[in-house]
Amino acid sequence: MLCFFDLLPEAIELGSKEYSFSAITSTVVLGFVSYMILDRLSILHKNADGVHSMNRANLGAGSLSTHSFLDGIGIGLAFQISTSIGVIVAVAVMVHDISDGLNTVSIVLKNEGKSRKAKIWTTLMTVLGIMVLYMSIKIANM
Image 1 (tube, rainbow, N blue to C red):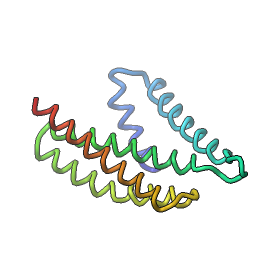
Image 2: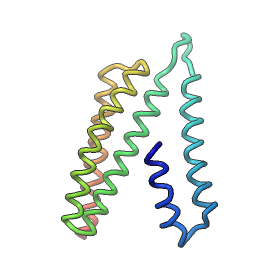
Image 3: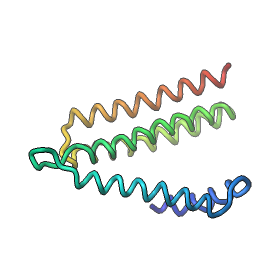
């Protein structure tokens, strides 16, 4: 949440050339509230046996996998600027992805998941990041 308040002023500053202040903040609030509602609704869902389903685990792990996909795009874009910037961003993202992997495992296991399911999600996150990085570098070299 702290990074939200750290990045919001920068987003407003950068986006103000193209969009109004209210458009930027409304989009941010809409995205945040939509995700929170989706997360809270997943808590309420139970299967036929009255047991909470894996929806919350899948939602959390899926969100972190999407985040990993976007990290790969960021690395690829950084390499398009220069190799040295690409390397710096890649190292920073790889260090950051360690905590994403731990969070994914924690979310899945906390929400009645099995370790096999956590391994599948972390593998998916890794593969997505590498695929996007590879595609971004290939596109940059065209």
